[in-house]
Every structure is written in C-alpha cells, then in structure tokens.
Image 1 (spheres, rainbow, N blue to C red):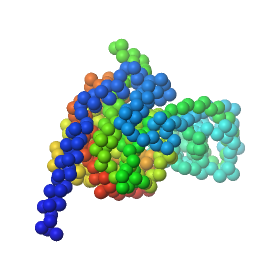
Image 2: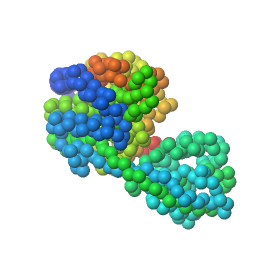
Image 3: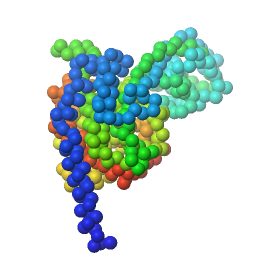
Image 4: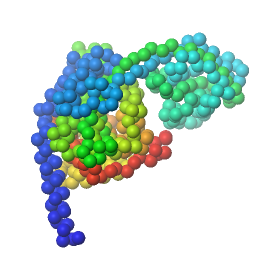
Length: 429
C-alpha cells in the first residue's frame, strides 16, 4: 500500500489544482462587484420584506438563476417559492387566573387562530418562567416548541414582558399557538378568550437546483438572505439601508457558487441554491424552506452571511458558526490544505450566532448546517446601519472568500465526504 501512496497523493493534488484553476476561471471580482452592486443599489430600497424593493431584488436573483441554467425546485415557479405569512391583532380579550380577571395587557399571543378559547382542560402544554430564571433562555425555549403552549411569567419580569410583542410579529398557517401571561400567583386554573384579526402578507424565497449525477437524491445547500431593513429616517441625506454586507454579500456568494458548479459539472450530489426572505423578521424564509425539503437527505448546508469585510484574522480567513457541532469544519479545512485561506471556529460564542441565522432551522433537524462569515460582531462598524453600502466592502477579499467556500465544499459536493449530523438535543437551549 505504501508504495502507491505518492501516486494517490499526486492524484489528489492534481484534482485540487484543477478545482482551484476552475474556480479562478469562473469566479471573478468583476462579476462579484456587478452582482453585489446591483443588490445593494439604492433602487432596491433596502430590500425590506413585503416592499417593491425586495420584489425587484427577487426578480434579479431569479433572472441570475435562469441565466446560469439552474432548474426550478418543485413548487417554486419561476424560481420563486411563494408563501403567505399573517399578522394578527387581538380584540375582545378576556382572561381569568384562579377565578380573578386579568388585564388584557398582561397577555401576549402568538396565534393566527381566528378565535382563541382555552382553559386548563384544553390540552395546552403549560410552562412557567419563574423569578430568577434566565428570561431570554426560557422564552427562546418556548418559542421553538412544537406544542400549543401557555406560559405563565412571573411579574418580576414585568419590564421585559412587553418586549415579547416584537419577537414574533408574523406567523405561518399551521404554527402552534403560544401564549404568555404575566401573573403574580401560582396558577391553578385559567381561561383565555380572544378574537384574532388576521392580515395576510405574501413573500418568496428564490430557489434554484443543479441536479447531481450519481447521488441525485442527496443534497447540498448554499444559502444567504436577500432581505434587509428598507428605508428609515434620513441621516446626512441618506435614508436607505442598502445591506451590502448584510446580506447582499452572502447572496452574491450563492450566485457565484451556482455559476461555478454549473460550469464545472463536478457535483455528484444535487445542489440547492437559495436566497431566503424575511431573515431580518425572524428567519421566516428559512423556516418555510425547511418544511418543503427532506432534511434527512441534506448532506450539508453552507449559509453565507456577511463576508464583505475582513475578519478579526484579517484577509483570507473566515469563521464557521457551530464549529464543534459537526466535523464539517474539519472537512472544509482539509480541502483548503495548501492554500493561504483558513477557516476558524466562531470567535463570538456568547452571541450564539449558530442559532441566529438561516442555518438554525435545518440544524435543529440534524443537518450539518453552518453559517460562514467574516463579520466582526463585536466591532462591525456598519452592521444594521445606513452606512452598510458597497463602498465599505473589500470586493477583492470577498471574491477570495467565495472561492475558498467553493474549494472547501469540493469533497462534500462530489460525495466523497459526508459531515456528521448535529445532535438535535444539543440545540434545545
């Protein structure tokens, strides 16, 4: 076996060199600049969900997918995976705890059921946020739950309770009802009655598919979100949140990867390229997408988020969120051996970035789904600001990052490597 090792290593090196040459041929800084500049232009009006600006961005991304020659995903006509979200407003609210009437302002409801009528016999899961609990952790746990739930929150959290109204302003059909009630006492019995007035809103993910050759049923996803914050109060004559880094940079990476893999024709696994909507509103696009795909058949997900600025390690570097959740990072590093580029574990663990981007929904289903980013989350000067425009980004370095992502994905795309799955119980935090 040992006498054949040099031959094997030479074959691997030749393959990696061929990939590198193809990547350099099919991904250029000029094209990166063109796509990035278009997505972050003023005429996209900040790409806020449910606005004409994001519709224009959706049309542009769909046109790019068509030009590349991607296939449409089932249910995504014209590459648009359209779905409806609802915003609800309560009326005619009546609440009683232990037989005593409770002020309606002490109820926050996440539901699109037209009429809510429940009590202790309704079969709802009951939760409690006790004095001294970590409020954010407990709330997150209940929001990610899968059962109809009523949560009784101790009045010591009164100043934070009202903020829950902004946590989940929109819902899909079929989502479970979740109610929070602020109450000073131990609850023995309760009743809640409320009407929900619903307002529908339609939006869409943009999805294109490159079918695999020998492992067609297995999928690798490349994603980013194309929505941003829209238009705000003018500062120095500028009112448009262009979102060049967040996340036109990631969507540009997705389009560049699609173009490369279509031309390279080296994907044994099927590749899915998706630009998510409504990330800034709570990750609704990725949540809907995850319901329409078989997570068991997804080998890996590369979610690309904010790669337009240098990382804390400067150029030719990026980090991977949830690095220790799977061995995907190790595989990517292996595929980059001999290059000047390096991936690092997420240096901002306290911010729990693994749970905050569009990878999280599929990760919770066990998919090795990670976000790749360079954003200095402790010192990113233009994050969620009017100044996040293309003039603040390093297009050359961004191009190098996109090339590195494509190179690092090679053995996963061709089916040689399969990352380990996320241990789902580790995500229920």
